[in-house]
Length: 121
Image 1 (tube, rainbow, N blue to C red):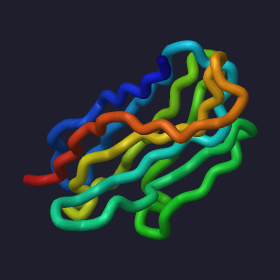
Image 2 (image 1 turned 45 degrees about the horizontal axis):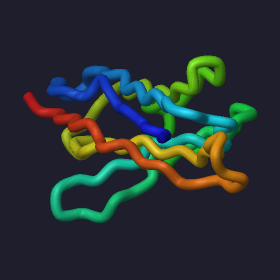
Image 3 (image 1 turned 90 degrees about the vertical axis):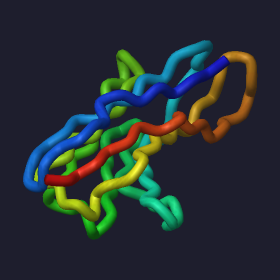
């Protein structure tokens, strides 16, 4: 069974930084794109950043220049370095990955349970 587990959320003051991590575990054959999404209270889930297996990245306009996504393909982990945080960045952050498990011949979309980031003074 494949799982995604996020860590690194918490409370931070405006202007501060946090680093989120998400580790994929289980019987994994390969991982394609990985990414981060977020959902603020009473809002729809939105894309924050994605990264392909080759390292190409894509960011939401609201986080460009402040957030950096990266991944470690050896440890099946994706990171989100968040700098210059703003109160509007407050949300539950979810990890997402397109994974082919060893027991399947197709790729499935997996989600973590989320980690809360609160930006407040």
